[in-house]
Each structure stands twice: as C-alpha cells, then as structure tokens.
Length: 317
Image (tube, rainbow, N blue to C red):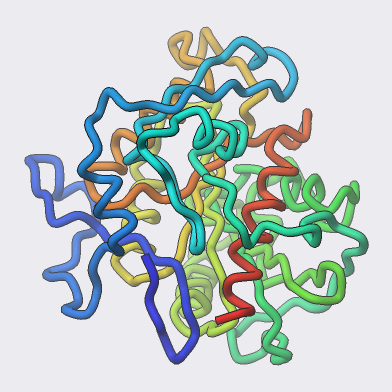
C-alpha cells in the first residue's frame, strides 16, 4: 500500500479492523485514518481462493534444503510496479525470493550488491542524524536478536557494527553509509538490556521519534528471533509500527538454529509460520518477511534485492 507522507512515498501496512478476544494483547488504534486503504493490487489478491498457493523451496544451506514453503497468493508481498497473475502460478513462483513472501519486481536492479560500507556517525536524537536526504533502512529488534550480526552479514564486513553477547550494546542511532548512496541504521534493541531503566526508556523514546519524524526512512526492518516461539513484545512492536503508518519488513533471524529440547522441538520455520499467523489477524495486507541467518548468510542476497526495489521506487517517486 502506498502513502504519500510529507510528499514522500512510503510503503505502509495497516492494522486490520478485525477484533477478537485476544485483541487486547496488542496495541490497537481507536480508528483507521480516513485517507488510508488497500491498493487495488492487494484487494485483488485478497479475493483469490485460499487453495491457490505458490511453492517455494528454501535451499540456503542445511538444514533447510528440503523445506517446502507454500504461500497463498494473498500472503505475498507485491512491491510497487509488480503484478501477480493468478492464472500463472509457475511464473509467480519463479519471482518469489527464497525464504520470503516477497515478489521480485521491476525496481530490483543491478545496484543491489554492496561495494563499500562505512560507519558515519552515532546520534542520540533524530535531529542529529545525517541530513543529506539519502534513503535509509533501519534495523530494530529485541536486545540480542542479532541486529549487528545481520548488518555485518549484509555488508560482508565482520566488525563494521560491533557485536556483543551482552544485550544492550547498541545505545545510539548508528548510521552506516552503503555504496555512498544509502544508509543502514542500527537502532537500540528493545526489551531486556543490561542498562539502567532510565537509559532504556530514553532509547525507546528517541527510537520511536526517529520512526515518526525521519522523512528519508524507506522501511523499518523488524528483527524477530526465529529460534524461539513468538514473543508478545515483538507482536506489540509490529502492531505499533502498523498503527503509526511506519513501513515495515519482518526479518526472521537465527534460522540456522535448532533448540529442540528448549523449545519443544519446533523448528525456526515453524516459529516463523506461527508468528505470521498471529500477526495476520491484525493486518489487512501481508507485510513482507524474510528468513535469515548471520551464520550461513541465508537471506543476505534476498534482503539486498528487497532493499533495492524499495529504494529505487522511493528515489523515483
């Protein structure tokens, strides 16, 4: 869905108006803004019969080589400029990025790969962030979800962003310039962090102010730990982003991990499916999502292609 906000187009996913007995567990808006609605493209998809599916194999290394993901067409993310023909499922399947629900569109071009990446600055207020107007993608998630590790994997640098086993390492808005033309932004984690409560409250405040005020923000990449069952705090965060019309992509991390005894034998792809089922109740259109691993680099190329098509559309419009 497209929204022209401050004259800049942004992809937005609305919370659904559907209610249930569990709705109170998530933040809910009192009403939807009058000027927001699903695009005709999404409306068309939503009327397709559920049995129509796309088969997609995730072949990014063990143990996912034999995993077959089946997606109903109304659960695909169709980017700007792309179309889906319900009568040609084979062609649609070939355009879905591996380990995701994202259809590859015409705005994904040859500028997806990272040539160079450099740290620019850390800011403690949105007003202190770079003002050159370059498009940016923000990474956010619970503390210790693997934000810095994923960032390093995306840019193919081992220590561009500092990683730590101690949650709460990232305490500022950190800008990294990629290819001298766009930014990756590492934001403080939410939830548990080994820092004073006052500091954690400040991080939350300036992070949310960044989301609401940053005009060059193309999309927030909300990181979810796929090695464990869904957490309410992650569902709350996704709901808040949707309510506030902040463009969002769900990035499932640690998809290489198997913690069978600790997590009841559930595999990452099962946790991913459960999370999607929970969040689907609150969104009219399926947000884009990608499965990743910083250990095997699963999903790295897919993230870059997804960023490329969002970025190129944003720049053109």
